[in-house]
Picture 1: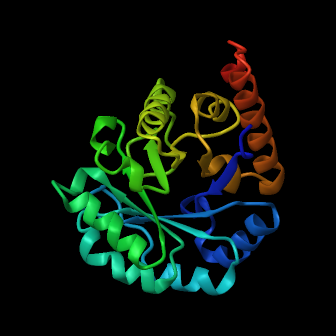
Picture 2: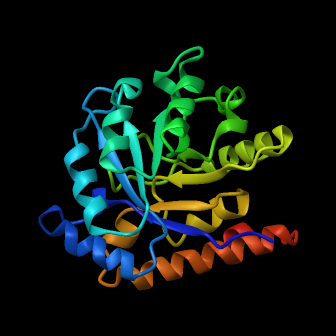
Length: 238
């Protein structure tokens, strides 16, 4: 058996003039996590929200904050986001070298926060090998990070399957999250490959009824996972 798919709406696609309202709608609609994209204009070619937004969100919602640090100096800034109230912190493998990745993960855990490592689309999944057993979650990017509204990169589900296989071999069980172009058509693909948490931007936040959109996506993903579990070859495409 498997746990139901978790939908983590990305507030990068929300209305920043009414962010409190939008987050309340997402909470009432059943969001499992609120995904907060932090961009520094260096690691990715865009700027977005930071510590003040995380602090404000922590006061306004009971949904855990899933803070994705798309920044080039996560080791220095981790304490800021921990103090702000992040429940999950994601760092990118591409900016942490040698023992730095494990050190960052340890620092996150020591603060009582869950730890996740993200991989850009062209980063080899093998970089996770030294830390896979330490992680609460792995984030597989299915677009190049930096902008919302991008299209899913075909074949990303194969990378999800590779991470799932690596975890099994290591005797580990991190959640697998996928971010980028995830909606009604692509959610079943990654779910069938082993994804547990789906980051949805426009597919949820830009819809007239975000709660209904989340429910449809989660249902399609759960059906695909169940079909894959029972060996149905069409499961991932439904």
